[in-house]
Length: 278
Image (cartoon, rainbow, N blue to C red; front, side, top):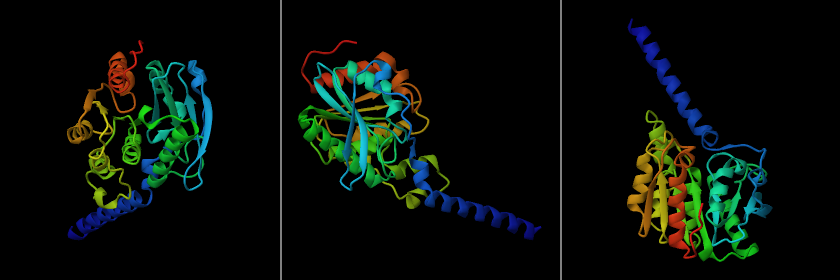
């Protein structure tokens, strides 16, 4: 009886250790879920756009879309989440366009038509390359650029905000840090010791001095609401918080007009031009 019990315990321990090894070795696959195909474009929702190409500091070629607004009062540089690519963000592009904003959205390395393989440092270099494209190639003044990041893109955006001088920052459905999120998602594992990724939003946000809007949903089943609230609590003034509705991937859509009005109101505080009506 004792021998059988020891075998069971040993088997469970071996299985647990195997899972630890899998989590450590393959954690990039848990974090990044890129797709290459771009089945639709802004033209699919009636928006004019430009295919743009630029290069990261390490030589990685990147691809994105620049969606102009004829009466733009500013430009949004958008960092998307960890899955899919820019073709899955057309609803967001359309909302920002309606609010009187140009949009530059791009794919991280390994996503869409961008070369390479994703990594934390790689996403930072990609974001800086996009910023440089906007400010140097397009000639957009930093004071006319809002940095916006959703989910994983929040980690990229908070880093970029610490290395540039944007007009404002929007963080949506994002986390305090990658280790914190891993602990919440996998509480039975010592993930804070295993994870090789940081994306330290909590540290970065303390250094952001420009106006910031943080949006999160209590119904978010992937990144707990407490992450968004903590980021708001430690953010510097001036700051705003918007409580969305819906799950992680569709909160901005299910929140409907309320979401659009919250973004519009924030943009109005940044750019003093006349409010753009829906």
